[in-house]
Amino acid sequence: MPAAPKIVRLEAIPLNVPLLADFAIASSTLKAVNNVAVRLELEDGTVGWGETSLLPPLTVESQPLALQAIGASEAILKGRSAGAWRSIAGLLREHFPDYPSVRAGIEMALLDALTRHRELPLYEFFGGAGSHLVTDITIPICASEKAFNLAREYRLRGFETLKVKVGRDPDSDFEHLCAIREGFPECRLLLDANCGFNADEMIGLVRRLEASGMKPVLLEQPVPRDDLAGLRKVTDTTGIPVAADESCASPHDAIRIIKAGAARVINIKLVKSGVAQALDIVSIARSAGLDLMIGGMVETRIGIGFAAHFAAGIGGFQWIDLDTPLLLAEDPVEGGYRADGASYLLDTEQAGHGGVLKPR
Image (cartoon, rainbow, N blue to C red):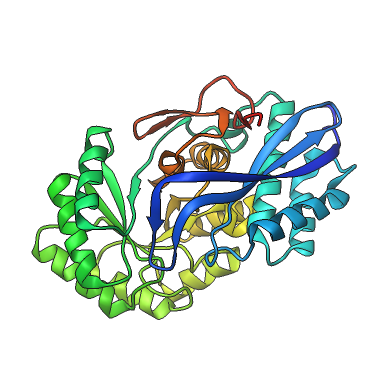
């Protein structure tokens, strides 16, 4: 195979998109996406696209900081072969150790450009295990009436699993969940507290739900990031699989979680670690017999499309949480995967992940 072309340009583009409605979680409320699109160009004219997702306080980077860091990265990458993506990922970790979302956006754009150059769909690059995913959809913290209406709507749209944000108050969360179950009686419930509870609060809410016939199928990050003992307590006491999200942002974190017996599922989010380290986390989790989840912050179809190809190509992800483009008021991306209700179809005869930012 001929040598891969060299990188000639790296560009950061503000990516500001309104949400259909406020998106409230335990730690914050989001009204719009203020991310950064990453455009990387190779010497043969091939262009790849990535996305840096920004959701303080869950991400360190702000939009101005991300724009600055990506701009500074051009000098590091320019003239390097796109085929050396692993060593480039290492260089980015050396220069930006505390900016994983920035690294992820650049790595996405680099791998998208490389696979477009090679006329290879991104899911095939990651192993070709599959080209189709079925996602859940999220109901944020909101009034019970709104939660009921969203549950009914998502039932009609063909979703089977609802991811419900909790973590501010167990009593209001319980009322919220009762309204959701009334609107969608047969749904599978996945609860995400975003570090908002302690172990006893999460266990108490689960017991109330079980007594009402609403046993969740998964509990995502019920306790603060560093409370691995709390994670394990929820895991051992409820018997429900617990997913480590904020607790797992690196391969080192994954090893700590496994040693502590803290969780049965690792939630892979590319913006927490970058693409290369996400591959390492997958290997560590699989070797320890943990299940895998793929998730995102709040991205457009650029970032979510890349994550979908990552999970489908590798295969074996038991939990799919890639719904955030469905929560946006507009789609700034053309091309890429096709969405049919809860199903994402990736085999679109496009190289890379296929998505590009629409001209403005």
